[in-house]
Length: 472
Image 1 (cartoon, helix red, strand yellow):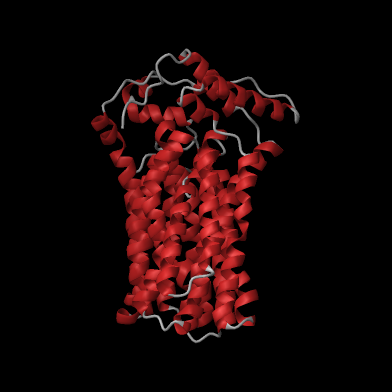
Image 2 (image 1 turned 90 degrees about the vertical axis):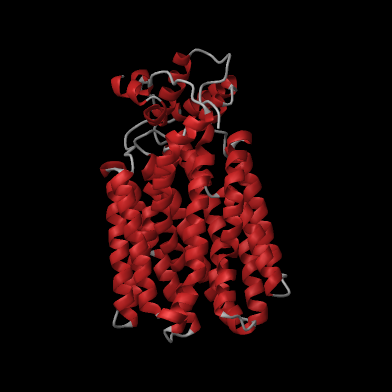
């Protein structure tokens, strides 16, 4: 990493502060809502592809006579691709722009999901899911990075809740779509038809390209100041169609000048934020991947019919939607750290209760609790680690956190779960999930930095020039 200073020859800093102040004053007009929902739609179509693997596992396991290890590896194959693609995709997004990478990513993972329907055997399917994960990795950090750069400091996690709810709607629809297709068609054909349906949103990439503008903050950082000013002018013009705008609060957007730092100093400055965010995200991703990928199989192993298992899995997944909306709202009011600790504490309790539940009904309720609080913890957490990094490295930093946490929680943890169930039993396995959730809670609560109510530029100053920021 190099310096985070503005490119040489850039306009006066006062002009940059004016751009930030103009962005911070924009109200939530229908046009800004459109941008949020288009970004959320990218996650919605992605979640259909991600959730597809968990839905078809109960069909493929007996059809292809898969072992527990093979089930686990297929379950995490797309996540392996996500992790491999995350960090280089992050740097690409910081260099070529958020919108271009978002468009390419959607096209890649949807196209490869369609191709998965033609897989002749287990090995080819695993390879195609892994390659689809590369496109998913490109997309994952982008929606909340984009939204964080468009909306004001008082709305970031609230809207992150809306974004993440779009993701959960896709996860909810995936098992329902499976319920419509899989029981009604012969097994060898049913899962293939389902993969076709999950890959059909391919054309959504064109919607993103047409509707979503590039981030003015990113344009400014890249030295394209004229384009940044034009972009802000257009945003203001659209906002004025719904009423007058308040005067820009330049003082609130002000921040002291950032000194230059060497690459080594820069890595040191963001090391704590990266480690804390990655540990917090590992606990959340671990619980998320277990709920998403294995709930149909868990309910099936508990003796429920296949259709009932998919219906129960859909109910568990749907519980995350109100959880995410509540988390985004509370994180804006009470702070990112406090709300993360609250949600992960209840998620751990739900996992413990799931492990000791006396009946299917209680296990359904406890599974919904894990989803509501565990998966529901994502909005505040994702916006939190997007906020930690400066504009020129925001997607890179968020991608690094996601790569590490998805490796530990989504690949290692999720791949070991079928083996743990086989050797330790279902109850003990869910106690491990609860323990990991409690560790992530403690690390964020003790060592995380609160960012509520601060502009992205002010947060950057606290990292790069903490003494100057404290005295400003």
